[in-house]
Image (cartoon, rainbow, N blue to C red):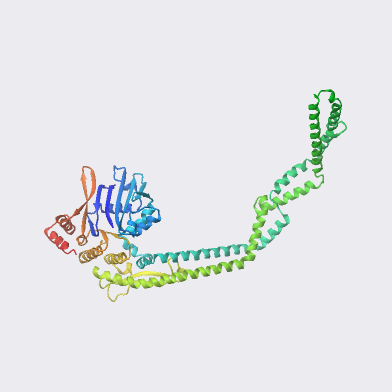
Length: 562
């Protein structure tokens, strides 16, 4: 349960430290006094969205610290353990302490700690869902939407895990169905262009394009276009190198002449002869390379024409298919693959159809089992809610949870059945939808009855009711207060209320009020007892002017608290 809440520089609150204990705690105050600020501060500690508007004017930072005392086996400690965070859980036995602190700067950035260990907002939200349930005056609008009823029933019956399994089975089924439909569409497209594909593949097979062929042909074409000039030049160079007066003969002659007199030169000619030998060798290599290059020039008069025809065919095919020449070979393989898909379509579609059938059967089996559990739980929920309606002055009202099968076209990740809450507020009247049968006050009491029933199956130890008694008064408000008081015998219940009948039932009564010093307005909270509490409840009964009759009525309400 929540044992303390410390607030610093949040909106109109400068410094505030509150202590809480088990049972019903009533928070009252005039409209605009700042009751919502307390809930905003608590929500901030539980992972609500941070907003720079929460920082008190003139302050640099807002901060909220919430301390909880929990049993050692509380789910919050398991969550911390999963995240690798230490906790004061007492090792799973006895009580443990959980301290959440969160700050918000004027730029809207926030930081959070759990037991002095930094954490993310996502973890705060997860922890908050296990620590506190907040039920606002607008929760009744959720009850008007039948889409929420299935979740309420699942929460009551503890079916959340099984519902998640059904959702996973539905997701698996839909994935296979999507794959089947996608394959069928691909095959249909391929079949519609089968003739074109076969013709295109045959053309490309005949063309037999190769990667890099265009560049290779372009280089060869450049050579062929200048082949006569090239051959003439190479022949002239060959004559200069190897003719009767060519370099090769001159070098050989020089080497022979110097070799005959080298022994008389005292070794001075040796380097010269060696250099001439190297030159002669390189000249011979150059002549051989020149001969090879000359013989490599295709002198076929149609060679250039054939090459240009090949280039034209390749480039025409590339333009036809809208790809680069180098991509033609890859395109041919892709088209051939699509033809194979057409040929193998029967096997593929049969395989996917079988997988879809199995996935559908798995989903349907899980969803049917979940539906059976929902129908069983619906009866128990109806009995439990009926037991709560009597203390709320609705003895004659009937509450019914309808669970009915859906057409297959309406199956979803939530299952194969529809859940709807129906009520009959008068004997003999047919049951109908909440929004068509129940008045505002009746709707609030139906909501409270459901919340009380759900609280009995929840691990959350703190319930917050924010003005859920709006629109009711007199004996009905007294009945609501009595029920909240009874609920507080097993849980910690915080209720923000404008109803004196509800406030009088609180084991603790906190009054929220504004005060002004100069131009500064602040919100404070005072725990009321004795005469102070009597005056506050009398004010709630009579308004601005507190009368003796109001004080007497307040005494009567307080005396009636269990």
